[in-house]
Image 1 (cartoon, rainbow, N blue to C red):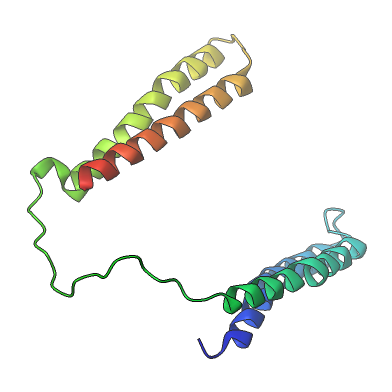
Image 2 (image 1 turned 60 degrees about the vertical axis):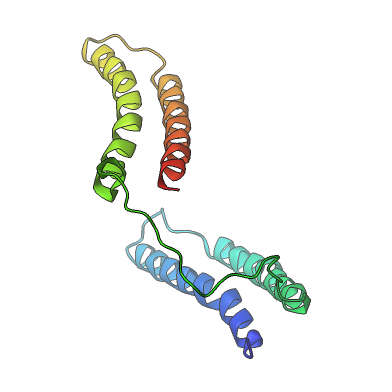
Length: 155
């Protein structure tokens, strides 16, 4: 819009500044208690230098090139007349698809986690983190597949 300089400045400074201020305040509180878990001052200065030396200039560079480009031209002209959307069957309603979309990833992980937990409870320790990585990969793949299927059904 018309205030692109203000928008760019707020993007570069507002959110990272808020996060840094909260972190700095919590770190000062930890430091006041004399904890060894406080972040050293040199590290805080290094983060500030990275922020102002890398992040802020890249935001301004991206804004410069972004606002210099021509606006996006859509390849088709859309009609102002809304078209009718047919009624969906009961199994494509929101509650049912949420339940079905959650049952399959849960079932895929539950069986694996059941075997891991039962082996731990019986004092048979395996490579738990390796199995958990496999369960996580199965969960990610199952969630991706369910997302694709549910999006297809909603069309």
